[in-house]
Image 1: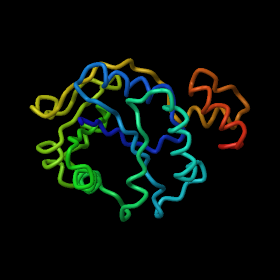
Image 2 (image 1 turned 180 degrees about the vertical axis):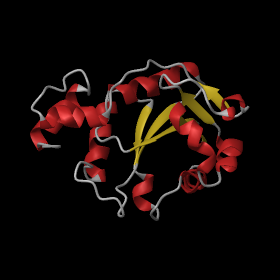
Image 3 (image 1 turned 45 degrees about the vertical axis):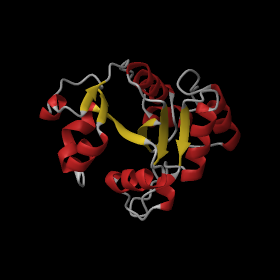
Image 4 (image 1 turned 60 degrees about the vertical axis):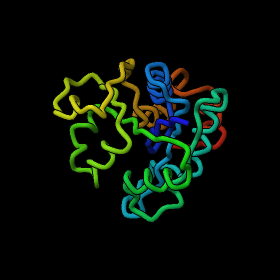
Length: 190
């Protein structure tokens, strides 16, 4: 099985995340997209970052109607800080019949050479990169293991969504309905 790994805090997951994931599925031969929820960094406590299990729960609610999307909590069980290469290596060992690729934004590609063992990620896993409206500034766009994905550029951010909630504004159409309802019931981000 070919799996694309979409890492993020998903605080909360929103339609922008889902649209990118669907665009990747539409333009590649991947069988599934796994949303890898990043745990809270113990050295960077943030009042606005929900507990990792709450964020995982919202991801599961958001993707429950798409069998090609799956939530993944693997980084909850790895040593901190978790580096992408370590997560990829662990997943490959756990799922030897799967091939994994990484899904990242174009802004992350510009910093990619600073990632731990970035050459191994490129050589053994490869990248699917979606521009976020920026002009490509990295030479890595030309790398044979980097595939450009055309995805809608939406200026939706989890920061904006949290600000709307704190100001008592609606987040309808920004997040899936089941996520919106869950946030309201749990009074998240207030």
